[in-house]
Image 1 (tube, chains in turn blue, yellow):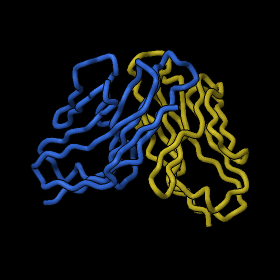
Image 2 (tube, rainbow over the protein chains, first blue to last red):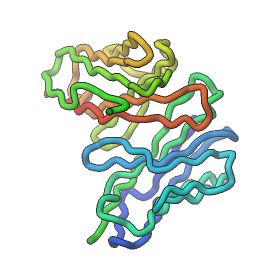
Image 3 (tube, helix red, strand yellow):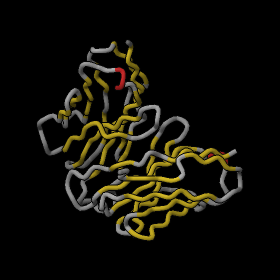
Length: 118
Length: 114
């Protein structure tokens, strides 16, 4: 079974600065997907970014980018130019190869609470 | 338009009661899920359905019974509610057959058992 570890329960960053949230995972699969979800106080789960394991290029979405190290099984999220609206819980998640029918679930890490300091 | 919608959003009920949470998605997805987020914010899958067929059932008590009348709906019925059932329950959906298909979540249903 896959596991996802987020070793930073809480992080804080000054507004406009850059912060990196770490995530490691354990799997024996070669094809899979990794995601970062954001959960603000409203509790809604919002997709931030995703990465296909077969792609070497790191995914980026505006101010959000990842550092995907497949050999090290590491998937960190970098938030540039932090804004007050970025304050939330951030969850790293793993999804098995979709062709592995019956195992399409997301396995989540325990989350990192990000605080933005004005 | 809400892609994945759940009702009710808030539910407070007494121990021993039976309650249902409804979920509907208008994304044309063929796979739907229920996730539970406990008081420590840990998210874990409970069930998944693909085209109305149960695919994943993750060690969930028999008091929890999902029902999928069609592939756009997945309801969760809970019998004999216990204090430990208090949590946020998230419905989600995705396309099963395509690479890169993202799982989209509803807004969550906050269940409090007193």
